[in-house]
Figure 1 (spheres, rainbow, N blue to C red):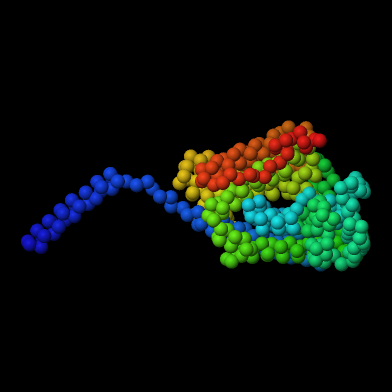
Figure 2: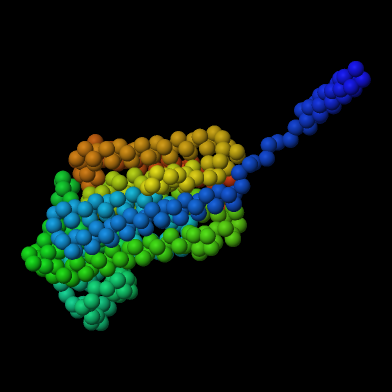
Length: 434
């Protein structure tokens, strides 16, 4: 009985103390502290970069193997397999483009792997309609595959060996001309498809597999063409390996973010999102081509794969905000995100931007659906195609609209103002026609 009485008395006392504590907490309630750490957001961003570049590297290695098979046994089948491998390699790579602009190490490197448009006459034979000269580029029709000596800046250059070093060290941007693209995805694309001579009509490039068949060679110089293709493929793998290494623990790109100010790191993420969304994708890659109705202004112009490139650029922007990426193997890399930070600061703004990012991807999917149904992107931007033009314009409008919300996020997080990349096609369209 004594034990029972003590227990009851003790419990009553504890209940009273608990009630008092609850009342005190209710009176002196403090505002909730944000749970998401900016440094953790940056770590997620770096982890996703590493995963994306690893996936890009893996698909580039598969492309390199397909190139080897094409060269060893040129056939319609091995050419088709190499083309399929090239298209597969674009999916993870395009999702990395959101890492440009804010990260100087990526932007400085990007031209080696994804520069465009290119003057393809620098590399190989072209149709007569391409012309024979350009006031802006003396190497416009240098055709290094057919010529073992070329002239660069008034000096004769030995081009007898089309090695990776020659392509990257001598031919890439030769004469300091950006259109002299000798390496990367688009040089390989041209070597697999050839020119798309259909304008805004149906059809992509139709390079025959016999352009690599030494015994039944078309186009001439089949052995040198194979040498060039293999060197370009080898370089792509090496360049992607370099960038994947930059995002590993201790890598230069990751370290620059981890060692820097947290707010500066958040600005890097938002700079990439806003600049790719507005000036690069909405402007230079989409609105410019639509204004001019010019198929030469589409990103993957030889293969008619532009709808895929644009879609996965948009997906990459969304992934940077949500802090989540689904890898090729089906696994997901995710963690604390910008979305988490914004949600804690301004839930309505997070809902707004998330909705706009989803809307943009949906508009890009509409472009892709038309392409998969038989109307390629270059046809959609063609003059007189009102429905196709409207589909592309809707995606441009969505990109511009989401950029406005990205700007609002910068302000909501009290970061220094960011000047996103612009484009005359959006900011001063009259200049496009001058």
